[in-house]
Image (cartoon, rainbow, N blue to C red; front, top):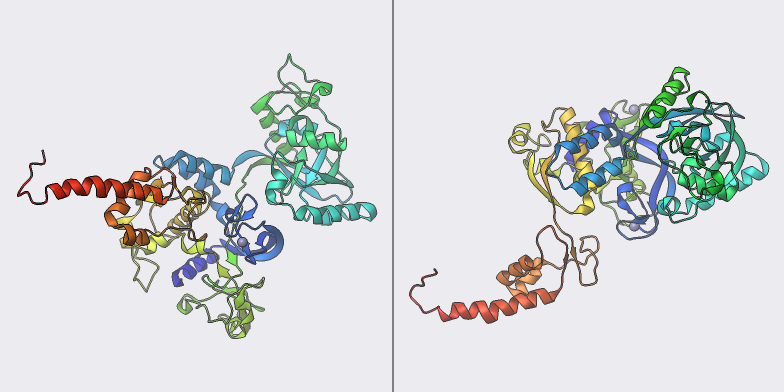
Length: 523
Ligand SMILES: [Zn+2]
Ligand SMILES: [Zn+2]
């Protein structure tokens, strides 16, 4: 892992590895943080415990700087399966729209809001803020409102992201007693805290247009918040609020919108955005769902993060000549909520490489997915001890002709290794923009109970064991017979038994019959 640490140092030097305090996914069972990509349906990918949110200082890779290249690069990969490309596009979640600056009435604080539908701006009747958002702390809430909001925030933090955003669960929220001002018409709108807004998306607050957004519509009906129609389907069809049981979410003609009345669809979006820009309270903006990649872990097994914290110099990268930072021996690997390395003074206490003063090593280790983000390059030059790999060798072999992996990595490893490839290209170590020309998704193998076989679950049937008991020919033939490579397989011993009967009772008998013959005319 010396060279994984070297990779970290390169990213750190370019400002692409950084530490920040934020809400992170925390597995209470494994006692470590998880990347968003490691949370499946609100549960820990390893142990299936419901994931909690915790506020912690962690290391991130700034993968969001590469969001456009990660999306646009997919168009240059005709031999990647469509479903994987779609999953990556949705995971990165690029949307174009406008950022509009609302103002909090009481404090004057500017509240920039991202929206893909600035043409509905005159229909905003409330604003919904994520319960985690620091915006709430700055509202100076008092008395009854403060109590209610704080109690609500605590309650929501126990809910999973899925519960909060799924279309099937009822959304709730609480009024803060404060108002924001819509810069387009000066109207005062209610500020709510609502569970369906996630802190990581945009600024952690959304403008709510109940007449033209289904979630906002349900929320407004539930709490008796005004609903104002500002889009009609076309010039001859008007909406009637008393007959609506859902929002009208399509494009249409702007109404009740002052000077913008009569504008339609894309044109309406452009004109309203331009107006906001000209008047200094808005701008065109691209937004992404992709977050930066959380890579620090509070467990023993992983490459130690090669950073020294110095009270004088701040964060200092371990000099490349001092790499690797070796994992020290520990008595107990059991995670206790912080890295086991944090309890080893002989590991933690070091001299600052810059000023020579007293300093401390970072106690965290890196997610294993950091190592796997560039292993394919090391495989081309595994014994090199003077550099991560030889540029010449890599130039000769790369890109990968055919990369084989499971669909479960679609929005994890298969994004991470593309990110590393692009970064290494930017710093002059590789030449190709994409690591793999062809991607082949093999089918997953399920055990007899219908569970995916995986190393982390320990339910894998070992091919070696099978070959020892059944023989190599029968094992191989059995695997070929179960399914084509891209299909999923429900593995059971019956398949092998069937193949075994065929081989022993039919094939071997035929062979036996001709065993003594001198030569056979196979035609
Ligand atoms: Zn877990
Ligand atoms: Zn120092």
